[in-house]
Image 1 (spheres, rainbow, N blue to C red):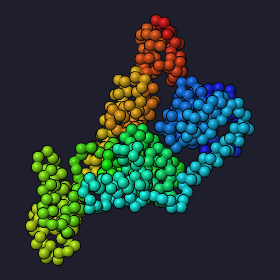
Image 2: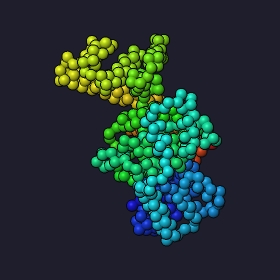
Image 3: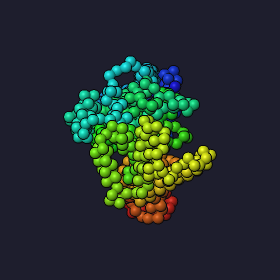
Image 4: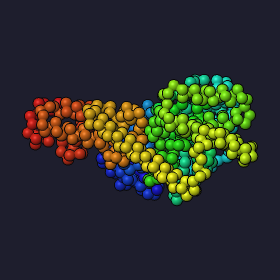
Length: 534
């Protein structure tokens, strides 16, 4: 049974449709109704219906504007327009927002029932197509998998980048018109109702179906995760990426009845950086909380861009290869270049320690694979860490020390994430408190100033403030308006404008909905002189 919210400013018609239409026979259950676009948007955010049936012309927020806003917060939801205006312009705009049906007034309950059955069938097919595995089709797997996993190449860096661009163009990932493209890697992990990872090839198709609606992309299955490379201009990535990943989590959770989490890498400008982006996307998944539904995790929201470098895997792999098969000049040249980056002193000592551990591990792997144990022991005695042997300690002591160190590290990371989230939430609330009079103030504008994603900021506000961003902003605006109405003689229109409302009628509607009394009535009761109602 699909859920539906019905929005129409004609109360009599709205009630008639709700009461006389056999919703359950058509596969639907009405969970909410709204008399204007703003109320409809609030109900969509709160109730998360499967379908929004809305009039195209309504007060405060038109059906077209409503569809645009809904696509930001519930991209997986279906929308049907109901309108008395047989206007092709509106139909064209409806197509832009992927409207499932366009119905014309007047419409009887019997006609609506027939249309609802058609809509239900379309929705059934949509979800079945996402869940259904299909025959193998042409995928750029031969290009994508080694790109993400970091396969070696014998080409110099500039030539390697050109070769990757050529292959990406052959796969249709980039075109001449989109150059220079930017790239982002997504890692999608799906769990069933018992918390077991259940990602399979059918989900690769489902993710591709969604991402290709917004951006050029290619996906493959690696290690129980769908890995997706997104390629587009920086503007398009900024505009559509958060919508696409939100739709992935919403849609796949419905299909599998479990949990879907998406890790998102930082934006990069070269294909040669895709392996590092892949590691970022997978790393972002590790931060996901174990409670509640799946979510989207942007690595840029969770880790500092200039954090201490701790991953020298590629350097270690290069060193291992040079020890096994490189020339002496190549080996010494590599080490000169690697350590040369630390000569300026502008580095964290911990980085050198971490690099040394990983480089020594690579040397030990090379030695252990070929050299006999006695010779390996002699070589180790000449290593920079020969005096720090762990073998003199018992396994129990090592386990105790390592466990203590790991638990301390985990606690430090958890505390830092919590403190950072609380600080960001406080900053956002501070911006609401100071900027509520700006009509353009939104979750997007604040997240941009804080340099985090809207999805992450929204989750932080819900967790730390216990309410949604729009509710906090509305409360601040209306509480301030009530104070101005009772303590000043400013015109109602001026108060509305100062509180971020350009439409006085909408301001009055919101005010009465919150306080149960109109601004004019409150003004009279408060005894302040009305210097003109405006």
